[in-house]
Length: 333
Image (cartoon, rainbow, N blue to C red; front, side):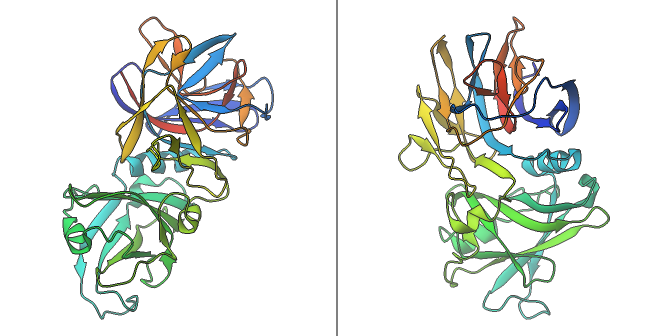
């Protein structure tokens, strides 16, 4: 992973092996030496240890997720395509009054999940819906949605193909000034044989749809991420600029230490880490509730290699070579 730029890195433990995926593709595997166990210490994002030596990440990390199950290769590939805005096709605005219209809403557009980037059926899959002047693999201009709503970000609804059954959605960032927004939508079922259709309703005169649309740590947002997610942090600052929110029901909020800085990310905002000395680098400390550590025959399951071939942790645990499993989008410097 020496090439500069954003990389989507996923580590998977399936009971016998650790697997590494980069940008949706399988890269390597190795047998594990023991089963996962909790060690009662904080999870670190941006730092790890090996043989008593602390290693810090030098670069930017975005969209960190940890699950308590082994996600499939199909899930990982679809997540990668979604994260790079290559999974959805945006249709045109449709006329109110057609069959299967959600009552009380003035406008909607059709969004289709491209089945060609789905290798197996997926359930409760979080899909990124990016609104901009060039959205989806068809580069659609959907800024009229932001023009209509302005800062009323919760005056939207997302439904399944019947146009009536609402999906839960999280607003990661809504930037009306620059006409961009990032939403995560829980799609109950994604087909492998045909495109999966959704509808995005929007209406500035509607009341806020707080039952289904939320921000980080809200009840609707917790329903976007299934119970197999232990941590989902979009790596954007909380309102106090000290903490990072966990979007799952677990409440595993992180605390910034040694001043990682918020910067523009691959999706919304991210955290930039700079190693200044052995014991002074930016890290995110998450808490002991995340017990997904596995001892493997490698330095770090999720890592980058610098020019001196030293492995620097993306996700690391505070004790020895025991490493936590998860996914992260990162940029290498």
